[in-house]
Image (cartoon, rainbow, N blue to C red; front, side):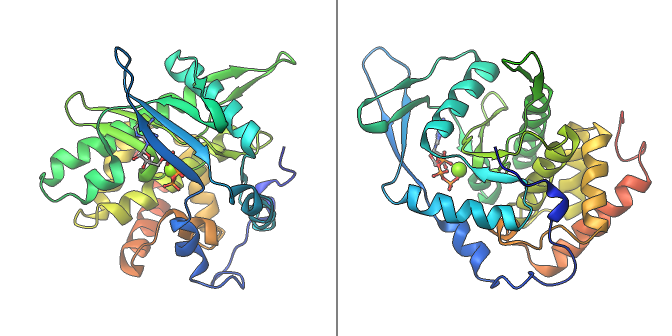
Length: 282
Ligand SMILES: Nc1ncnc2c1ncn2[C@@H]1O[C@H](COP(=O)(O)OP(=O)(O)OP(=O)(O)O)[C@@H](O)[C@H]1O
Ligand SMILES: [Mg+2]
């Protein structure tokens, strides 16, 4: 378990001495090999395993994440596979199989990665926004799942890397499914903080990927689908302390033009003070 609490989160202007290129560069790093697998009479699968160099990066990477007070860490191989199993069982009632040489076999969900769907101008914005609504509802549902622990306690789930790159949207059924569970919040952090951190990744990456859609429409879509006020309050508090969009992790998850970022942040700050009107059934 990660020793950090999010208390040490960097705040204030600038990027805390980290070079500005580090975030976007980290965002392009691929830790996994992915292969589609077809077997006669069986539903399509995705095989996923760590690339050979991943273990070399995970240790130093987690040290940086800890120093940043990011509240997340990338799980080493065995823990990553165990978390994928636990979450597939809890969310979908599926038992995952492993193949030889470290492959983990996952169900191949239909549809498109939402980040790609958001960018595809083939569909009008309202059709694409239905994907964002579905992803927000699926995140809300994931956050409602309680995992029992061996010691008798239980843990409310959070994703850990809830960007539009980690959710698939099927326009046919309008269903969204979150995947890629290798980055986990420290379980000691309060559920509202972890859930607010997932909302941070979701809204910042939505503003990045839906570049042609007004920021207010994006935020309204997410808020209409995810109305629980506590995580939004946490997000607003972190923003008010200047702790959002400062670290290489936040920049790796979403790279926003300054104007749209400022607009988003001003709406996030206003939203909490106008709770009830903007937060629906909050
Ligand atoms: N269960 C799945 N169903 C369908 N496609 C999937 C599934 N899992 C992964 N993919 C495809 O493989 C790609 C990479 O998967 P994943 O995000 O799990 O790996 P990653 O190495 O963590 O990549 P990234 O760094 O982009 O998050 C996804 O963008 C998606 O296109
Ligand atoms: Mg991913």
